[in-house]
Image 1 (tube, rainbow, N blue to C red):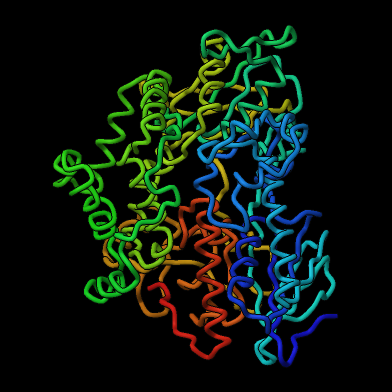
Image 2: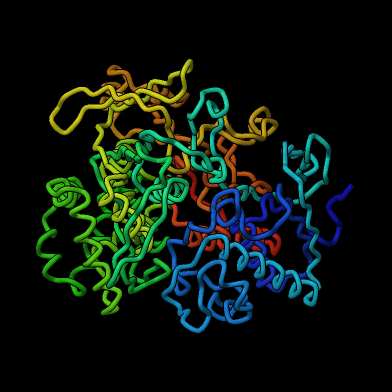
Length: 587
């Protein structure tokens, strides 16, 4: 059994996917050799995680980031592609001679790249003298905090796997399995995609219209027909004989398809002009301890257009957040979704060809990235505005669906095999436990209530924000080491009104204030767990996004992995050097 060394500090990284990869790289790059790193991985590979392995992808699924958008690892994707043989690339349709940094690639191939980077990091660690222990097929079942000993115990399959000075949760995606297998043809997610290898000679209902839904569409399309290239550059779809009645019906809030990849001026979604920690701290001090959503919107979004796009700045200068979202949504709501999709396809293609950004969309992505980390300091009122006003626009605009996926969606629609239905906020699913499938209840664009039965249903709204009750490490809940994420209301009367009208997420604190419970666990700015007594942990850090969705309502894939890993490792290394500083907690 491993135990902390008197001279070396033992760090447990729980999860060996992309987050674990960046954590490991950060510790290695620090040059510290007084560490022992243990990586616990439920599978048998390091690097791919769920999105870039067979758990989350087939050959047809591609990344939504190109080579130039990937945070720095050991070698670039472009350099790695050149090391592969032609036969190894042919099955993925990649030509190394034509590959360049603006290309997207199949996710399974990208998973191999991440795995190769982990191997290179381990080789570098061995040469540098950084001790590393890899535990494959090791699903962590519990974490026990032992504050009196200042250590953490990690359990794997119910057995003690070691004692550590620090533990970092980087366990990746978690998909619910509540009805799958109990109700025929009812899928709570499209992952792993192999489970969709079936024939459906009927309409298939999909909930959602973004990247997760696109994954399901691409898989289903290949089970029921073939795509054919037509001259000069047009794709068509021909269904198989057994799929005469097959079609896909996507149900999307507001009836939107995702926006399309365009040229990013800043491919890593980071701007030096963004508000820094000192700016945010100063503003909070002047604003009753709260971060204002309007302040972030003004400084991190609107101000950026003064010099970059003066015409657009003049258009939005006097707009409130609500005005801006209404204007942008209105531009999309008044056009048939597939007509708009084709128009945006042409706009995105021109952007890539000219290497010129669609600046307002890029800045919206940067705003989403910028607001993610300090969102825990919003008032409850502003968090509700973020959830109900801004995030619906962000989730539509910054999906950045690749062009190849667009071609397939358009071909399916033109073949009469893909339809998009706009559903309202109150839409819901009635499960058909006896015969399988569901009945979809929603109000259509004409205001009429619809009840449409489907024999097959796939939930594709993406990674859900999980509650503290769904947190797998029950000892941490029992001991009070972790706590419910919540935000304080600024206006007591507003909170009372919402509670009176049926909002069950509003609770009263011992301090007499009202709080809004948000999904998952409370964490500091450094991703340290916060106890039920309000004390930050010095040993446990949580960057597993399904369990911190309330305080980190949006995240940007690999950019999140890079940023969060840097914050956590910096905090741990500072604490080891005796330079630890306090992190802001929520109100």
